[in-house]
Image (cartoon, rainbow, N blue to C red; front, side):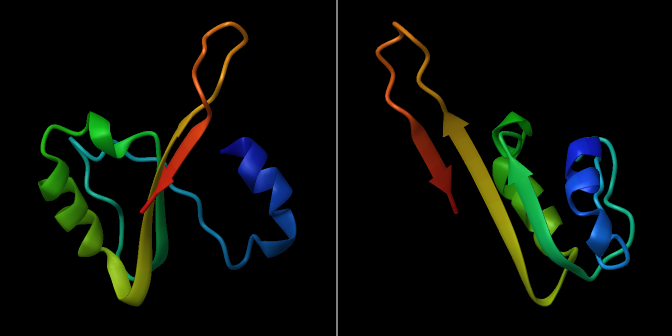
Length: 85
């Protein structure tokens, strides 16, 4: 998060980055414009319950985006993949 905060310093009045344990904690507040989850949602015990929980925190018209990536490493034979919903 420090890197993201540094890159968006000129927008700090409009951006608020949060890091939370979605299994144990609730996100503070509500009315989020965007919830972005990268390589994390599939670690939650109940995928559908977690997504429903996130949806309740979005403002009307807000967006939830999940991403999962797989990078190719030398000699691994894996192709790069990126999944977004």
